Image (cartoon, rainbow, N blue to C red; front, side, top):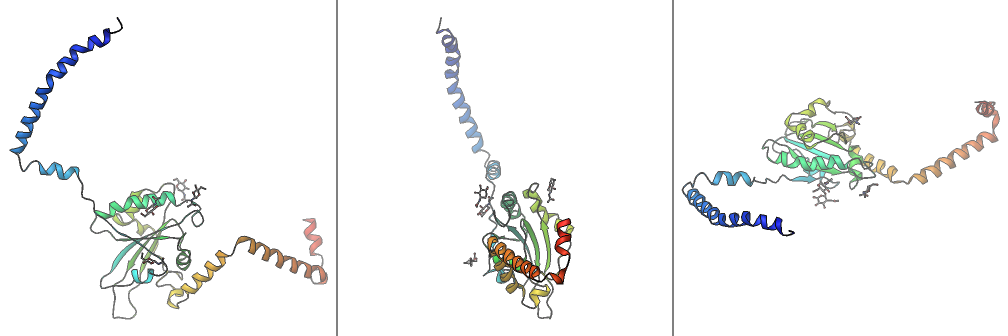
Length: 254
Ligand SMILES: *[C@@H]1O[C@H](CO)[C@@H](O)[C@H](O)[C@H]1NC(C)=O
Ligand SMILES: *[C@@H]1O[C@H](CO)[C@@H](O)[C@H](O)[C@H]1NC(C)=O
Ligand SMILES: *[C@@H]1O[C@H](CO)[C@@H](O)[C@H](O)[C@H]1NC(C)=O
Ligand SMILES: *[C@@H]1O[C@H](CO)[C@@H](O)[C@H](O)[C@H]1NC(C)=O
C-alpha cells in the first residue's frame, strides 16, 4: 500500500522516457530548419546581448578641476554630481549616489549626452569649500569655447538640488534629456566658481581654504574659545557695572 503512489507514477514516467527520442528528433529538425535561415537568426542573438557602452565619469579634485573644466576648442556640457558622506552629507547622499550610478548607462546610450563628473565632498573638502558646494546636487555646467575675444563667454551654471528620498536615475537623466535644469534659475552670483566676483579676483581659492580651515577646527575648540571669551567679557562687565547699570537685574527678572 505504501508504494502505491510511486507505482501510479511509473506509467507516466515510461511515457516520458518514450518521448525523449521524439523530443531530440524535433530539436534536430529545428536545428536543420534554422540552418536554412541564415539571415533570420543573427537578429535575435544581437537583441539578447545588448551592447554595453562605457561612459566615463571624471572624478574632480583640487588638482584637476581647473584643467578638466577649462574652455577648449568647442563648447562642452558637463553634468557634475556632488556627493558626500556621513560628515558632509549627514548620510543622506547614498540614495542619490545610487541613482547617479544607475543613471550613467542611460547617458551612455545617448550620443548627445554631456560629459559626466563627480565630486565627493567627503574626500575633497577643500574643493567643495571653494565651490561652496552642497550635497547631493547636480551642477549643470556649460563650458564656453576658447575665444580670442575678451572677455570670453561666461560659464552657464544651474545647480539642481536632489531630493534624497525621491531621486531616481531618471530624475538625473532628465536634467539633460528634458533639460529640467532650466527649472532652476541660472546661477551667476559672487560664488560662481569660474565667473563669480570672487573667482575673477582670484579670491575663491584662498577663501575656500579659509572656510575649510574653520570647519576643520573641532567643535570643542570653538566651545572653549566661546566660553573663554564670554567669561572674560562677563567678568569685565561685572567689574565695571556702571557702564551697563540695571542690565543684570533685568535679565534675572525675565
Ligand atoms: C586628482 O585626480 C586625478 C585624476 O583622477 C589624479 O591623477 C590625481 O592624483 C588626483 N589628485 C589628488 C590630489 O587626489
Ligand atoms: C555612515 O553611517 C552609517 C550609519 O550610522 C554607517 O552604517 C556607515 O557605515 C557609515 N559610513 C561611513 C563611510 O562611515
Ligand atoms: C557609485 O559608484 C562609485 C564609483 O564606481 C562607487 O565608488 C560608489 O561606491 C558607488 N556608490 C553607490 C552608493 O553605489
Ligand atoms: C522630498 O520629497 C518628499 C516626498 O515628496 C517630501 O516629503 C520632502 O519634503 C522633500 N524634501 C525636500 C528637501 O524637498
